[in-house]
Length: 68
Image (cartoon, rainbow, N blue to C red):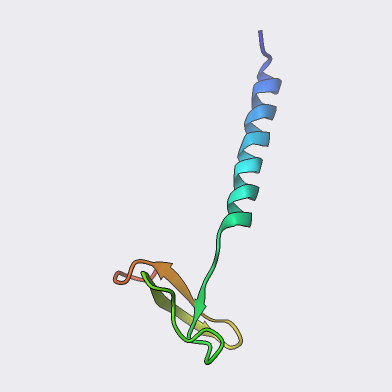
């Protein structure tokens, strides 16, 4: 009924669409950058490395181990 190439093409298009939509809607918060972004929003924690001009990255959860 459907060829293997059509199924693979549909899977590729679907996965690419999910990847693009997720990357466009994900909000990244930064912290420790002086007056511009001193703290993370409520419910997030500040993790390093603190990069000059960017600061650290805020991760969901007030406690926990920062990802590498």
